[in-house]
Image (cartoon, rainbow, N blue to C red; front, side, top):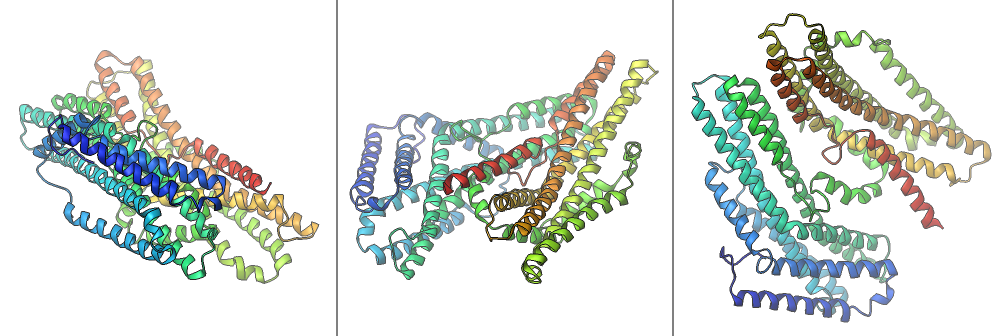
Length: 635
């Protein structure tokens, strides 16, 4: 799976050995899958047979590629990758990894061995020696895939450590400038050249990584999803009529074996996303460094920002899609839909209660401190607010409780006091989610008002330029620095917002979609045989509850999108200011525009997808497609 040496041209014996291994694994896999399992395929439906064929093709295509690529068509790229890793290792002073790689390797392989041994134990009891004839080759191929994924994880982890080191160097430079140690222009330029050289090497590693591992990554992702989907199918039906003990053991063995590659794929995707986050942090640190730098140093830093932006890392699955947290979301979406709504509510409540005190305490405190400081900046904007804050709090809560009381009245008429035994806790949880959603809307509204204040200041500058009021050469740069500081502080707030509230937002969106899907199903069929009067009341109650829950989610999404629109307006006003500016002022404005573009806000649902108007479309589209799918299955 890796080149035997760093020599670019492998000898004839290496090539023959690789061809022999591929031929052997294709032959044994074909005999095991096609010949020895032919008797069990008669029990499979067409879709199950298609899944078996596709899994067979994916596993053998992956194994063949993994063996042949380093020897034949990807040998040169492998040599290049190893050389780049070696070169960057010489440029890095410290290693960010706390756990030695050999320890990780032993633990991970030990986990796989335990799962594989249990898998063998269970299935040999059911199928005896026939299990080895039918599935031994597939288990070995799965281990090969698992080991390959660990190799990719190690390479990405090394890349992440390198990017962290770049950020360490940038932070070091920022500290030198902040305390104004004597740093000569030549020394500063040499430091920036060193960092630029390291960034270029890291981009080269990223490009070669995508070139070598693009196809293996997409094959691993496809096989992980298919394997888990295939084994989950066995949970809900006993296709081979095993007895109860064997059936439970078979489910545990299969799911544990399927979860290993799935978890490995998820960890790999998160590690790739961590590299992207580190690169984004690099840009933010560069802008902070530029803000504190002297005029002679600003040009060097601007060039470095352009270099990082143009060489931003990207992990690609053979060019079909990018590998990041969205990959994980797309993989496990169907599994999340299978969770009950109560489980999602419980997860939401546990996270929102525990996070401010434990895992997100520091981020939460810093965020609230920053979001509430300098609140006088938004007083100009808030003059246009017609409703006072307390009314904006009372009215949504009043609407919620009117709808809740109506729903309680309808269901008490049908179920009596049993309704409170069954649904009272869920109603309280729903209100907790509604209140938290309102809290998020308030925070986003404050963030929006701060961006509006930036635009207000920009508009003032535009008016000054238009009527050509006398502006001193010192005042204008100071005004632009003030605006730059505001934009950077707002970007930091945006990053912390995503970090603290990302998981609650994704749970709110998931629950809103599932609630809509569940209650729409009840609208089209009278599942419990209510009489006409009761059925109309149930429909009216369900629609109002769904409307309330989804309206809160949609309002939050639209407010996040309003922030993005306000920043686009900031860029437009900056270009307008540039049009009226003199030649000496235009450079300052261009730098401000680049700063805004480089620190454009992004609202993220735990890094899985961006939150904007398209999120509403995807929510409703998913619900509609699920309704059509359920209707098709019923027919």
